[in-house]
Amino acid sequence: MIVPDGVLFGSSKAHQELRRLIVQDHKLDAVVSLPSGVFKPYAGVSTAILFFTKTNSGGTDHVWFYDMRADGWSLDDKRAPLLAEELLGVNPARALGEAEHAKNNLPDVLARWRLRDGAERQRARTGQSFCVPQAEIVGNGFDLSINRYKEVVHDAVEHRPPQVILARLAELEAEIQAEMTELEGMLK
Image (cartoon, rainbow, N blue to C red):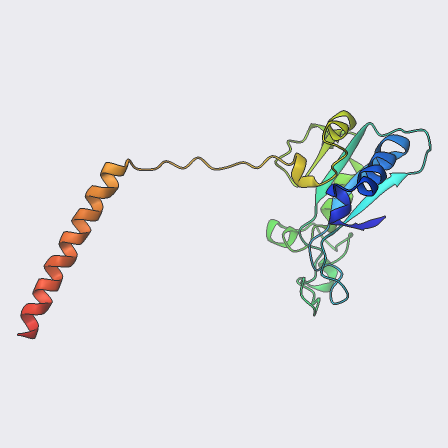
């Protein structure tokens, strides 16, 4: 089922009940977040695909999430191909390199989908795909937004002490003043 992103995290009773129903009364297998623009020129809204099996008896153990960023086509109204034709779709003519993967995630989605009950369960939540146990989803009010569960890794940034920065600014200001005095001398 393809849904607007708002369905994944909306706080209305209808949104929450729909998500509860899919997670607890049926078997939700996956949430694939699609990039904005994938349905252009018809609609520009962000969407996701919910993969579930209607069981009427539950069955969701864990949910596999995938953050699809590209489908091989530009995300503007023209939807022009970003790669050669043989590299588009889920089964390209050869394995895609890193730069090509950045333009077409479809082969990766399919490969990781097949591993969702195995190796994907062990993946860190910093990657493009990972699994989340049902209990955690229930604990988060059935929120199915990938951003709720994805861990963002921040690079450690070492900042210079303020005294060092101020000293450097004073040096630069002195250089500027000296060059301005020299310029004024040239104009006389």
